[in-house]
Image 1 (spheres, chains in turn green, yellow):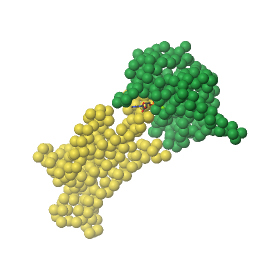
Image 2 (tube, helix red, strand yellow):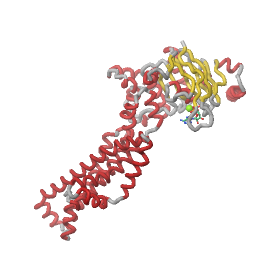
Image 3 (tube, rainbow over the protein chains, first blue to last red):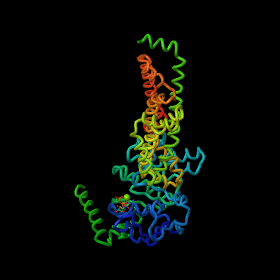
Image 4 (cartoon, rainbow over the protein chains, first blue to last red):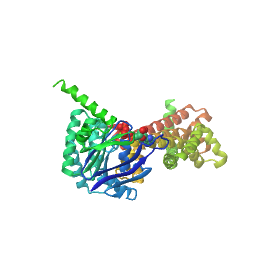
Amino acid sequence: MTAIEFQNVSKRFPGAGRNALEDLSFAVSEGEFVTVLGPSGCGKTTLLKLINRLYEPDSGRVLLFGEDIRTADLVQVRRRTGYVIQQIGLFPHWTIGENVATVPKLLKWDKARIEARTDELLRLVGLEPEEYKKRYPSQLSGGQQQRVGLARALAVDPKIMLMDEPFGALDSITRGKLQRELLTLHRETGKTFLFVTHDIDEAFLLGSRVLILDGGKIVQFDTPEAIIRCPAQGFVRSLVDAAKERGRFWEAYL
Amino acid sequence: MFGQIEEYFRTSLDRWTGMLAAHVEVSLLALAIAAALAVPAGILCARYERLKGPLTGLFGALRVVPSLAILLLMLPVLGTGTAPAAVALVLLAVPPVLMNTVAGLESVPAPVLETAAAMGMEERQIWQKVRLPLAMPMILAGLKTAAVEIVASAALAAKIGAGGLGELIFTGIGLFRTDLLLIGGGSVALLSLLTGVLFELLDKLLLKYKNV
Ligand SMILES: Nc1ncnc2c1ncn2[C@@H]1O[C@H](COP(=O)(O)OP(=O)(O)OP(=O)(O)O)[C@@H](O)[C@H]1O
Ligand SMILES: [Mg+2]
């Protein structure tokens, strides 16, 4: 089953000189973990926002499970896609517990169920509910806030997870831990992940396939092994070379 | 002097409470009307960009007209009494509430609104649950400015026969009675202060998340 499909999608922002995304076509199967990699401004965030209709394409179609999202019910599209925004975007006037319960409350779950789910999710992202549930976002570190954002996106078990550099504010140890937990979550739930990062190590570690974007175009979309074995273009090769360079730097000290 | 003031409160306490009540009444009325006008107007401004320029411009201009001038300008239009005083006070109070409502609504970070939409909130829910609550601190600050300004200016409203503590002040001026002036002025000052404190309390009570 194809979970996400782009058909000749282009997007241009008003007043921009060129398309932010240029004739994008690709498909992601259900259960895949796809990482989207590319330099700043290449259109990664734009790509994600086209999937939950925060943006509308200028041309082309986006399909979720075979259904054109333009004709589908907007709220339904958004409930089926968990979204972790780059800027975290927690609601500052709600406690951590209330933030995580955002969608369950919209769906009018009963209190006990919301309570249980909130605790479960907070534990899943490594935040002890007793300690954190009653706090406000301003009382958490940036990394802890990002985890709350992840828990909130997972709340009603969406089939598709859209994650925009969710681990940007984390130190490398916590980041590694959450990366492993995310992979476990992926294995156990079979959800489809679209995970944006500009960190090549993260992209290759997490992705079962990596979609490399440059200047609004797909330059390569393949498994990490295939990309490393035969990089499609100068741009990809320079990315891979930079990563290898870093590897050699560390090897020198082993 | 102290003797006179004491004498006044011993003999005319009823009159004083009456004036205080009238003062509070016209102030509350003006504040309520101003809020009922300015908050929705602010929401409209934040929502429809085109309205913002004209509306905030108009009230911004009104703001520089001194309160006394507004009060006196009302005279030929509405005559004397509580009603014209209230109208003048409302005109005075609308600008700070309107400006703060607009500024508050616009200060809500775009990513927060975007996540709200991405969670599947409908437009109305985003306003009710996210945008207005997050604009609240600034709206409250605007109401506080307005309320303090109203309480002070309501003293002038006595000039056009609206009663209130201003009566005491103007009688004091007319009769060269420093004691009456002091009682009137002091009461207004205390009432302004109290108003400010009340709004601080309200802020603490309603906006717990800001004060953690
Ligand atoms: N709302 C907008 N209005 C106008 N231009 C925009 C808007 N959002 C993005 N752009 C432009 O579109 C291009 C792609 O932006 P996008 O946010 O998708 O990049 P990105 O790959 O997510 O970058 P980063 O890694 O820095 O987050 C950029 O050139 C950006 O300037
Ligand atoms: Mg981005």
